[in-house]
Length: 232
Image 1 (cartoon, rainbow, N blue to C red):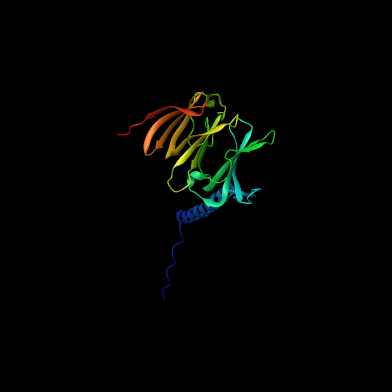
Image 2: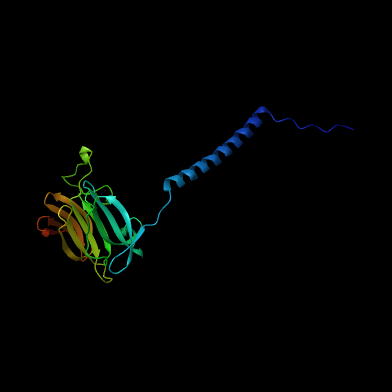
C-alpha cells in the first residue's frame, strides 16, 4: 500500500505575498476610519440659528450669518423668518432673509437697515467687497495689494417687490452715515456692482429684460449715467 503524496509546503515567496496582501487590507481599513473621523471633526456640530421675538408683533425670527463688516468696528447679522426658505441667494442656509442689523462693537448701538421685516432681501453686499462677497468689488480703493482687507463704505440691497412678478428694488446706503435711498424700483436684477471711483458706484443690471450700465452718484444717491448694453 503506497503512502499518499504530501503536498509541497508553500515557498517563502508565496507566504510573504499573502502577508503583504493582508497588510494592505488592514491599512486600507485604517485609512477609511481616519478619513471618516477627519470629516466628522471638520464638519463639527451644526447648531440651529438662535430664535428671537419682536417686541411689538411677537413674531419669531432667527439670527444667522453673524460676521464683521470689513474694515469697520461693526458686526453684521441677518434676520430671517423662522422656517422660511427662499433658495440659495437668500443666505448661507437658504433662509428667508428679512433684515440686516449693524451692531457697533464699541458702543453697543445697533440699527436695522430696513424699517420692518416684511419684505424678502434677495441679495446683500458691501462695497468695496469683503471676503464674504460672492461678487468681489474691483476698485481703486481696494487695499488687497498692501495686505489689508478693503474697507466697506457702502451697502447694496435687492428687495423683492410684493407679489409674484419677480421684480426688485435696489437700496443703496452709507456705512458711515446710515443714509440710504431706494435708487431703482421694479428691475429684474443686478449682475455686477463695483466702486468705479470715490464718488460713483457702477452697476450692470437687467431692467425689463434689457441689459444696461449705470452709475450711481454716492453724494446724491441718484443715477448719474445710464447706457444700454447690446448683446446682438
